[in-house]
Amino acid sequence: MVVCLENLKHGWTNNPETFVELVEASGSMVTFDIGHARASPFISSGDYTLQEFLESVENRIRNLHVYEIESKKKGGNISSQPIWIRYVPLWIGRCQRV
Image (cartoon, rainbow, N blue to C red; front, side, top):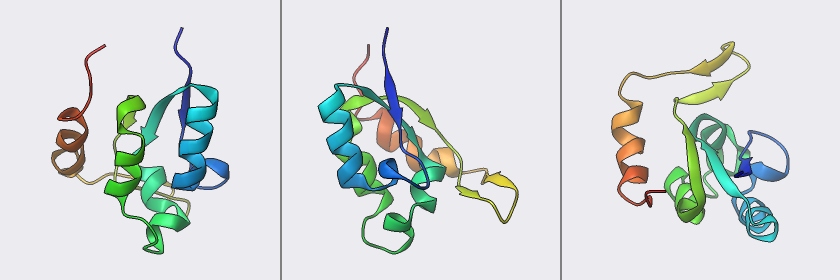
């Protein structure tokens, strides 16, 4: 059985540094949610880029949630048709086959 920790829009797992610490300390794999990451205050404020966040855990990613951004104002997940073209190849090119 594989246990994955998912980054969220708010809370401990929205901070890239804390997320890495939690993943490493627990030995878990990662479910990386692009929409959560982009909505995180650490990304939206410019403290980190989405790519930096993704790369910080890239060797532990087992699942990838792909959509533009999570927004309560717009009623949930906002998708943009070409998003997979921008982000999925970045991840697939670096992942290990299991």
